[in-house]
Length: 117
Image 1 (cartoon, helix red, strand yellow):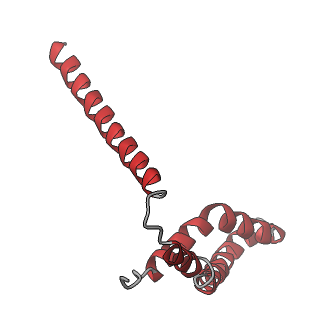
Image 2 (tube, one colour):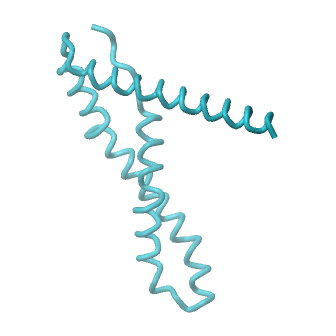
């Protein structure tokens, strides 16, 4: 019984230590935002690259994923006579589940570091 409590206590302390390190990292990151030198121009370039320049890739990926999903779902819905629910089903599945994942994958795939200044 004592070894079980020691093991449980050690794991708990390790988890708390890890959470404390993450909290310190977060606090340091937030505080360093406000420490000079400010690189506001580079920040705006990253926002433009991630936001505006990635939209075409994300929209294209979402469109083709939606088409494939619709094609596969249509045959299943036709068996039950529910073809009218194809549009809402695709919209809900893409908006709720797949859009954030696909957007993150496409932005990560496009990511390239800016050259140093």
